[in-house]
Image (cartoon, rainbow, N blue to C red; front, side, top):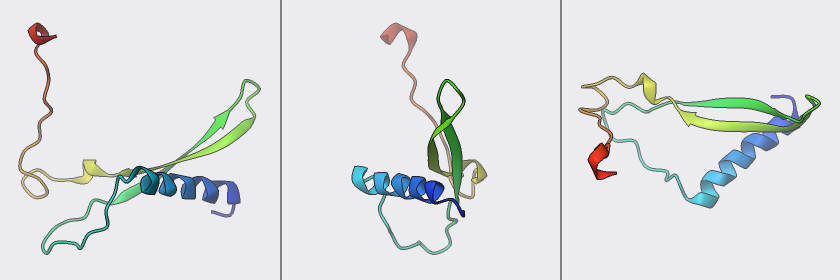
Length: 84
């Protein structure tokens, strides 16, 4: 990362985590796998295709988890059509 604009964008993303209080540093429990992270970068452009902003996102690679190893079951509650 030689471009300061990208570094600034990444720092902005990390500051948002602190500002919104969405993470907590904890000790790693024994015999557990850690979900790795991945940086995503995108240029925001205007109508003339000129870069107006560098956007960075830090995401967890949850797709690397294995059922029965990293988690037991997964579900998402869904409302029935009659309830809506």
